[in-house]
Length: 196
Image (cartoon, rainbow, N blue to C red; front, side, top):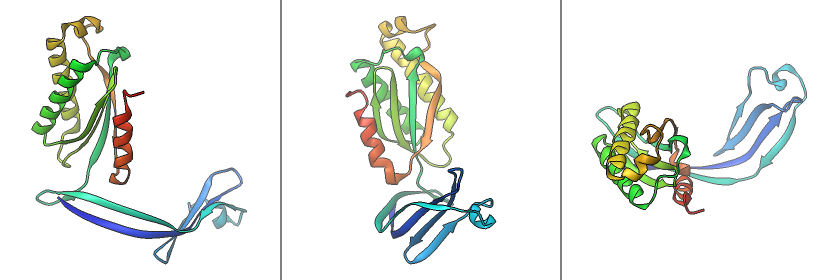
């Protein structure tokens, strides 16, 4: 893995709103260069009125990326997966959670996905992981859901009795990409799940 860094000073950032409260442009100065984004129907282009409603002076931003390498690619891909128990049944308890985490780590290793953080509440889990661009995401998520459901129900018959028709996971899930700039904040949020 390589780590690269980018440091920019952002100054005089402003948002201009038109009369109907739509953002009509964004103006920023980065390292002395002025960047302005104007939509094609901007009031500034049509001669209408606009008002500067927000601006601030100098803010230091730093971005760094851990890079993975493939034969013909360099990448930094992190994901946040949230999977909910069907009908929000509160069946994820201590022993179940330990088995769930163990199985997810094993499955992730098989798919060459690296688990960065994994936390559970009584009716859902949050998984932050990074993967190669070649990861077959639907197949990976299906494997996580299928194998963990089978193993939990086999090892914890009490959980199986609480489920509707023996279905552990909801058919839907939430998946989002996460930028590394906010990864620490996201990890903190995931770690706090179940502690409230």
